Length: 322
Image 1: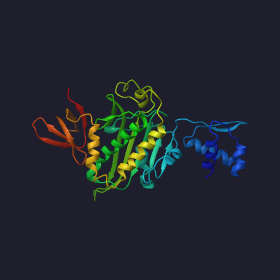
Image 2: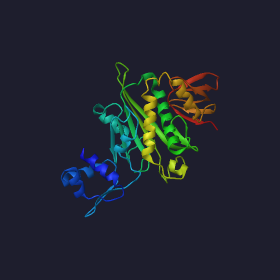
Image 3: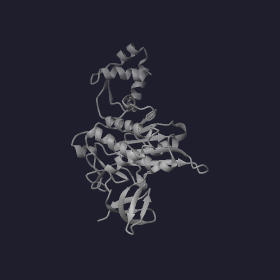
Image 4: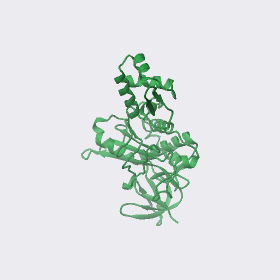
């Protein structure tokens, strides 16, 4: 495609202006085709500046674009198609609306969400060019009795990706990813189940990470943090995205991930804040007090209640009992 041929030239001359006339003559296309190709690259996330009588210049930056992600992941399924948006309502919502036309492994990435969603119908703050807001569509190798296990596996992938990219070792509180007792990331897993057969038609894994945020709204600033605030330097978002997608591929697209559940759960438990602690677990209808003694093979939290009986939970909000 013309735009990728243009990109190849701009990459070789990064930081230097290349004239439209030169691009047109080398690629044997019209100036209009060059203009269209440049605009397409800009919409894909490339920081390209055009100046009259000078041409076009590609600047190195931390913006996200689908071409860089596609060419830097080692995946066969995840990222089979990558869709990039400068602004979107919600990446999860987009996939659910367009799911019939999207293929297995599609990744939707946005620079900004105007209605970012988190668990329990909460809002996920998603300012422009600060975080990672992406969703992954799965249409195979998914099982009804292992939905929570899939969420836990996704958490492991994100924690691995963060460590690889920053050297920071986050924890999990079952619903969020935590650094120094503050939320740095969340995972929202949604699915569609066929009523007659109980077959899962698809799953959407939504991942939101506070990456280069330096500040937050007053309503959440005491509860959240970012990788940049914790590390003290700007974090390369493209590298982080690629690391996470590679880990998701390695974990979820390996057909042995169900049979390897014991190993996955053991890794998850190493980073689980509440293991061996007395907690309150709140569901839609109950509040239960007990000690977290493990996670079962399907991803449910095993709670040893005050009456010395065990109960397993797959949803709810957990807080340490003070």
